[in-house]
Image 1 (cartoon, helix red, strand yellow):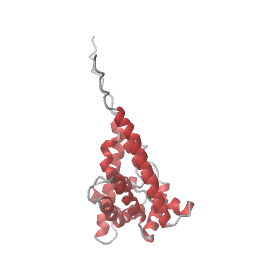
Image 2 (spheres, helix red, strand yellow):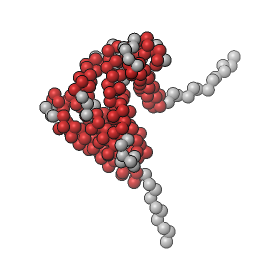
Image 3 (cartoon, one colour):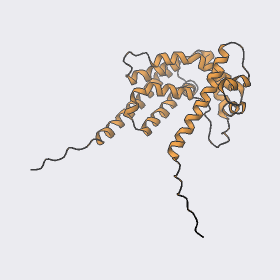
Image 4 (cartoon, one colour):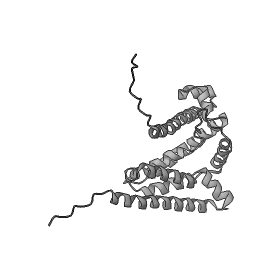
Length: 232
C-alpha cells in the first residue's frame, strides 16, 4: 500500500515572528494605558472592568500587563502629564530632519518634570521591578513603551540610513540614558543636580547618535559597486 506523502511545511519565519510579538505586546499595553488615560480624563477613577471594556480586552489581559491596578493608574497619569509636551518638543523644528536637534529636545523635555511627576515615576519603577513574566514565557513590557515611541519618533529622519540591527541598537541604547532610570541614577548615585543630569543625558544621547551615524557611513560606502576597470 502506497503512502501519500504531503509536501513539507514551510519553516516559520522565526525572525519576523520574534519582531512581531514584542510589537503586538506593546500595542496591547498602549491600548490599555490609553483607555485608562481617557477614562481618568473624564473624572473619577475607573475600574479594571471599565478599562478592559474601553481597550477591548479582557480583565485577565489587563492584569497580565499590570499586576496591580495602581501601576496602571500611575502609568496613565504620567502619560497624561507628559505626552503632549514631549511630542511638541520632538516636532518643534521647522525642517523636520534635524535628528540631533530632535533627540536633544526630547531628552530635555523628559527631564523637565515636576516633583510630583518624578515621585510617580519612582513609584512606577517600584511597582514594576518584581513583575512576573507572562504565561507565554515572554516578559511583557513592564514600562517604557512610551519612551521607545518617543525615541523612534525623534530618530525618524534617520530610519533609512541604518540597517535594522543598528536602528534597534540605537533605540535601545538611547532608552538607557533617558527616562526614569537614568534620572534616578543621576540623582541618587551620581549626586547630580537636575541641570547637571539633563546636560549629561544630552551629552550621552548625542554621543550615541553620532557613533551610530559614523558606523553607518562605511557600510553605505562599501555597499556601492566598484567601477569596472577600462579595457586597454
